[in-house]
Length: 206
Image 1: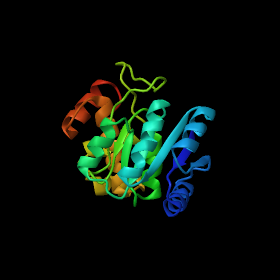
Image 2: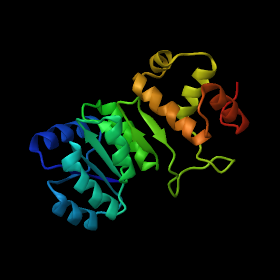
Image 3: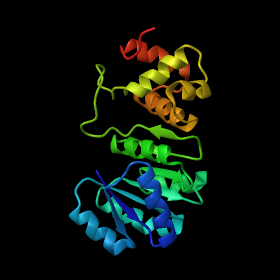
């Protein structure tokens, strides 16, 4: 999936392009405004729009992405909960802090590619939005990834998020991402429910 970085501010584009590079994303196209973004969306199949800086300049870019049925993540300096709710209601696939770390951005991009929605600054969480072609488990729901099963197995052993992060060699935010994705797929809200449901579906054995 190609990434279209859409933002009028040169400083934001430069900083975000470096962030994408550090996250391992090399297929990045640039759109400085709604017009070029509309053209790129028409010419690019399976594009993901990454817009941002602030909500005022991001909103028309998000509108273009939604019209083209392309997923869009906003990187905002003013990513308050109220702003995030409005952005999501307008069709955003994610709202992230502009100061997000490369590893967390990479995880968020992968989540959106899988049909999830992501939020940061509120403790990276995901909401299921089942995408066509997403791997399915025996029950018909999305199957857990290897990392999600590893994180749940450690939860089952009583390990804290910090402990899971140390064992898996990732950040605590990434652990939160994996657990939130697992919770969404399992349709649960607590750790105990997640472990029980994962065992029931054959995703986890103790």
